[in-house]
Image (cartoon, rainbow, N blue to C red; front, side, top):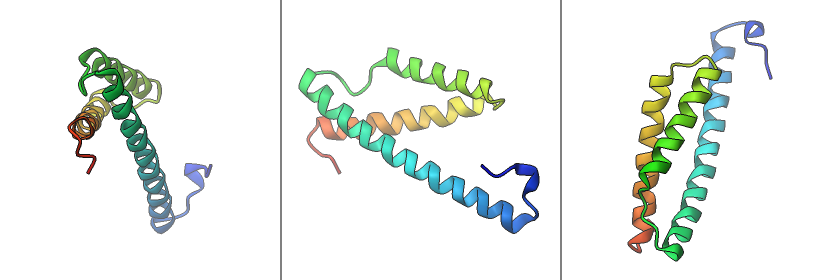
Length: 100
């Protein structure tokens, strides 16, 4: 990993941010594939898309990881709640037979 203080200028810094953004998108795509699998398992097991206890568990995990990394836990919670709502909508579409 590049040392942050070794980045010489804004173009190099922006390139590093762009590279991280690409990695984040790839991770979100992997997460989306896992959500598709979760939807198939939930359909098989007759589980709902939204399981409130799991939502709160995921949020608590994200807040803890944020705090451990020195990030704003409230901001991370907001981001994660949006991710979770999108995942629930994705699962719901699958459960209703519309994987689009």
